[in-house]
Length: 145
Image 1 (cartoon, rainbow, N blue to C red):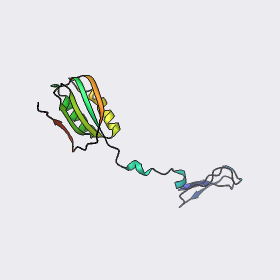
Image 2: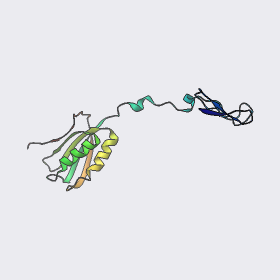
Image 3: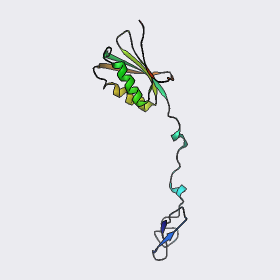
């Protein structure tokens, strides 16, 4: 049920079955608000908004006291919460290396959450772009010396 303020003394009349609302601010034509359909008032949605978000792969190298403190499992847990796919591994030089694929905004959040891993003392996090790599899930890998 829509109401219209028409030019017959300002009385409100009930209008049914119309898909627009008309309001006329003055009695002279050409002034005030003209009739508009719903499609004209609501901007069109962009068709690309509902598509799959852009994927990006990054390489994260974490240095400090990060081995033998549960860092890899913490990173895997964070990744599963954010639906990030990739892998994490201890490196022979004492760092932890993670390769992660997801939406760029989620990757930024993921990197910032790494600092919250308990028992780890992070000295530096180095982030580099990596060629786009698709993973099935997020895995902890072991590197044999």
